[in-house]
Length: 165
Image (cartoon, rainbow, N blue to C red):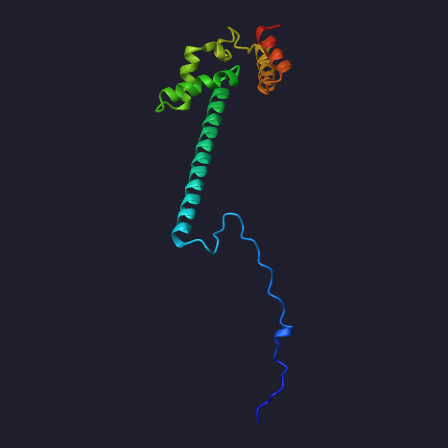
């Protein structure tokens, strides 16, 4: 004898919950109506864009690393004004890419010794360092960093200090 009434597991159409509202597709997601070839083209275009951005980031990172190496080499060589000497070293490296950072700094030191502080060996017969030059170099370096911000007052103070005023 078949059971003709509703059982506990039966659900009538009147008691079914409504379907959830449709969610909008996220930006860049493929639409359901997009054909396979269009989807592949969209993915390829997105991939090319991301690869280009990656290459730009890699080259920017390489440039920053080279600038850091140049700055370290200039400081180690005793550059009086790293900000002034850095572009000259960059141009030298760009002119001959096989040249390393240390060689470019050494070449700059020979061609423009005024950009570097006097070495300890030329401090005098006594071998004592010149305290005036050492303290002034530190002051010039801090003024150069402030002037690099572009503040006109900081630039003026830096130029006055370089002239010895």
